[in-house]
Length: 482
Image (cartoon, rainbow, N blue to C red; front, side):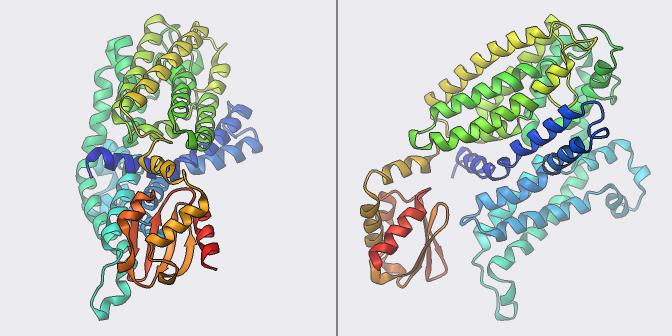
């Protein structure tokens, strides 16, 4: 499989953890709207919602480690998810500043503030994704491994968390050595563009989005939004003591992207999805688009296409940079405490340092048109496998042209007939079957019928991946064999 095919698999696997993020964003957004000044300090209801949403948003590394491992595993087995969790647990412990100090025979203070800051940023989308992928690959390679009889208990799926643990030790050692330099190098880059004005704001916008897949946008955000380099853009904007038309320029350009551009991209993804998938894709795109509009939480949208269409994601990063440049150059300013959504826009509209914020609406409408046009053209022109356009969805379409009973009969024949089957069951996308003689299986015919894959689990179990109608086909097969 080429790199782009593998990235598409990762993109599909990410749909598992991403599905949890819109609910988190809305909980935090509503809680913040109830108590924007105290962030829950003045309202138990706000604290309850913000705490609930934060439990998800603040733990994306864990969600990715488990969800990606599960999604990439050949049969979506829980052993892969467990291995992803175990790997990240080891990494989290070994890169704790106190543990690093102990391992290097020094003190936390001697590590230096920069290194401590880097190690404290160890749990992010990048590290979660790494351990999810590692766990899935170990599962796919070793879930059927046979060990000597005296070690047989640790064979098969039980071997996967063990292998992932060993890999986690090696990965952790590498990160202990290189992570501080990489993390702080990003911060140094941010500091180097401070004096470039609107151009610097545009460069920051591009880099900010390019860091989202790595989970390192927080490092560069610290340079511009907080007091790492003396800019402190967010607190200064809300305190009202900055420079009108300048303070807030590292925030304003995000509003046209988060509230307009990316929701328009969702519409393009929905319109270009295959007809049979439009309802499913539409409900997902509507949820994540509304989350972006109201709260400014855009990761669910971005992770939906960044791996399946990386070139399109680079275009998105450049458009974000353009938006920040334009807003800064024209002095159209609004600010946020949480993110660039409707709630923060309304709250900041009449603050002392808000400057022509209504023009961000005009800019947003223009960027919505640009995003929709660019995304729809690129998806169709280059046949990008955005949600609802995956290869297996196309195979599903071929497989559903016949009646359900006819398809079930055809699958039975390709599986060696009723006499070759024991138990017939199904999960969301797979037929799960007990087979008496695997030699009677006609795999090429199964593929012609629309199966995306055939997975042999031991000598007597078979899984046939046929898509979302697996349960219906299994039920029809049971009826034909009774």
